[in-house]
Length: 237
Image (cartoon, rainbow, N blue to C red; front, side, top):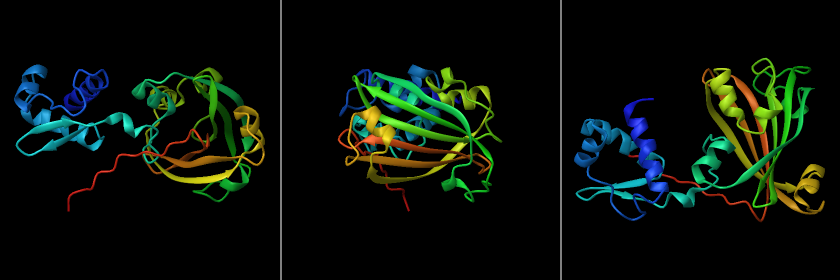
């Protein structure tokens, strides 16, 4: 981890803890450079990262103002694991693995990014409980040519930490879509809803650094609990 990344992460945590209140200014670049024993250029890089992730807004002649990061919960366009989101936003949750099996390639993935009929996939179904309510059911399909197996204990804690930390995979980007559909039988059982009720489905095709497709995720959300929120910054021209 580069120094500016550590500083950015440390300031983010201080913002979450209220050490730097929303609407107030961060210490000046000079003061931050003294606090972290680094150059002003390193502080500028850290602040640029904070701007890009929606934690601060820099104003000419004033400094960096702390933004209300909490309003950006459940980002759809980012590529963040559920565990990382939980830790970042400090909400209580329980994950239960309902299915962990090896299956032939699902029909809807055959022909997508080189997936062939008969190719093996790991199929995971995980239920996400928050505040005592089952609000999300995740369906994951991982290519076995990339990931041989996922221990159930790992699937219930942090799959991406295992894939990146233990297997050394470089997870890079995803294509996502959001659709509304009627609840399937698993949704009905886990969420306690009926066959005529709708859920929000977030589909993700996930790729490695070398552009290899390795995972498809279909995340089903209770419609009255789903909140689409994203931080968007217009890039300079």
